[in-house]
Length: 207
Image (tube, rainbow, N blue to C red; front, side, top):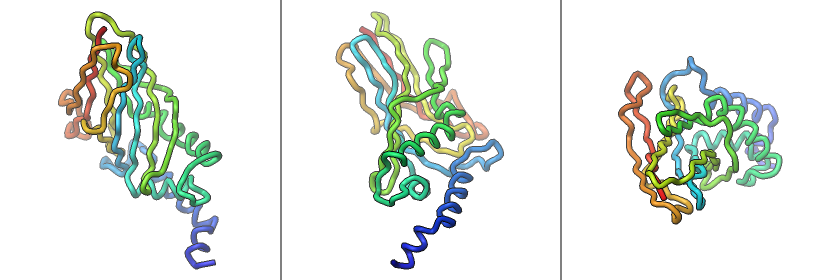
C-alpha cells in the first residue's frame, strides 16, 4: 500500500475534510460576501402539449468544490456517485439548499414564486466536476394570449456565484406552442451592496 493510499483511507483525515467542506459550502448570513462556490447552469424549460411544465437545471460545480464533494460522497473513489452515495448526497443537497429555495426565483403575472421542492435530482462526475440535475415544477397552461414567465437563480449573500449563460440553454417539446425567450442581466434586481445583477430568463409562449 502506498503512502497516498494510507492517507486517503484514513478515517480521521476524511472526517477532517468533511468538517472543512461543511464550513466551506454553508452560506451563513455572517459569511464574507464574496463567492466561495461557482456554478455554471444549463437551463431547460420543458413543455408538453398543454403548456409549460417547469424548468430543468444542470448545475456544474467548480473544480475546488467538486474535489471536496468527491471526498465526502465518492467514498469508493471510483469517479461516480450511486447507491448509498447518491442517497447521502441527495439528503445533503436538500439540507443545504432547501432553506434557500435552491436559489430559484420564478415570476409570473406580478407574483414571485420560491420553490420549496425539486424533483428528478441526480448527480454525476464529469472531468472531475460535479453536475447536479434537478427539476423545478411550474405548470402553466398555454393560452391564446401570450404570457411570460421569468426564471432566475442567484444567492443574495453572493457566497455562491451562479451563472446562467445564453449558450447553455435549450427547450424541450415546444412544438405545440409558439415560444420565444431571451436571457439578460436584470438591472431591476440587485444584491451585494447593489453591485450584482442576476441573469434572468424570460420565457414567453402562447397557442
